[in-house]
Length: 162
Image (cartoon, rainbow, N blue to C red; front, side):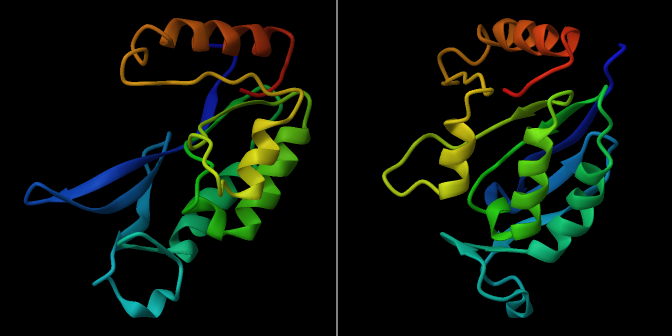
């Protein structure tokens, strides 16, 4: 299409039927570890979410160059803006700048609101230029067309964020 997409998504990693972590996968097909269950090397510091240790360095090496090079006619996929990813202050700063580029369409996923939602997540959720869709197991197939329509509307007027 006229509006190529760039970005990344998060995928669970399973071994012998149990979830052992998450990888980040770029739309270009590059992959790196985001988090592993905590028997993963202690050298990765104290970035913990539940049973997982987050490999912030690996995440940043894969994702930051990608997000810094988004051009104005591209749609940028950011899956997700969540607790693990937010251990990276660079990620927060780069995503903030992307959201401030009026000509860039950002399609991001946020965790559902919780009493102690990260401040950055709530800032994104409350932006005037963000259109939110609540996706559930029940509606996730039927809502896809609405999301695609919204992305197309954004890219046709070159931009804003979802």
